[in-house]
Image (cartoon, rainbow, N blue to C red; front, top):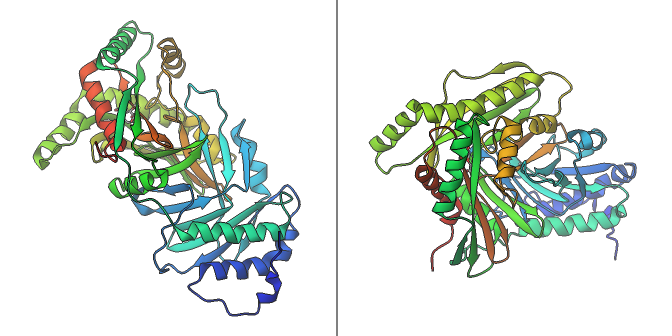
Length: 450
Ligand SMILES: C=C(O[C@H]1C=CC=C(C(=O)O)[C@@H]1O)C(=O)O
């Protein structure tokens, strides 16, 4: 492979609006510093780009859009990947991570944790190239595990990666549905709900989250990135993401923020208790008032909020939680929602906090062991990362984690959708079925019927 003579160009002026020229210039200037990083250590280089760049529709098969546009991440390639046998497995790599560049925008890794019923290990990877829009800055970061390839070869690859990431190319149209293959029907669902409420009445457990699967065959290939972009437009208050997973991608618009960490502050949210949206404002407000007043929904919610509060109390010096839940309004449904936050005691990392919180009773049930046993007994499966967790962690140890809900696993012409509902004493099978229909429609509505 030819090696670019990058060094000859350091003295040339850098065109302000040309991101690739900026990156090339910065790489050239940093070659010696990159080469000085010991083998086996991560090194990243970040350049700041103008915020007013002519519109970029980034490509890359990895994207993360935080609620309310707080942070947008577009990434491609893999500089480094590890299985997280324990949350601390990444800490040494993080501590030894060299960040170069003229702006303080820490490089970051993406990670996923499987659902409770899946024995797979959590995984973490650092993308080779990352475009980030956050805190009023647009930045481009390239990363490398030293020793993996010679630095000049990595430099060439970075420029290639950045060119294709910034070049865009997301397929805009989404395919129509060719066939729907339900994993269960109303009779099967009702049977599972009744058996669960009977087990709750016997005192075996307090809550279990049952789920149903819907496989959708599509008339053409589904572009997971385009799905995520569409979800982000429709559900701006959710964390929207598209992450590579196995041979396909996981796409979601998740309303459930499991954890966010900034410095020593950490925040989580209990989300449980659901009702539908209504076209008229009065009917919508009435449904929300009924949700807030329902003892059944409040109990379902309190189980989650108490569990999160207890988990945070173990690692935080202080925990703040409002007295009563608020309403989170989404397009299809409204939920009971309680934000719970705290100040971390020293020594607990972000991934530790996530591992401690996951799985919450919002996706599993309670008590944890009894719910796990019950779901095992009921042969409740999950796949495509549904009810797992996904997120990012940066070199400073800050990060964001969202439950994989309102999601699809997309591969070629197939999308596998899941939705679940918390079953407690008093749950009605028909109502819970309608609730899962509404949750499934988050993804299903993106595809047109033939
Ligand atoms: C399990 C799901 O939602 C959870 C999150 C919010 C509200 C829920 C509920 O009211 O049942 C569920 O616990 C899902 O969307 O598949």
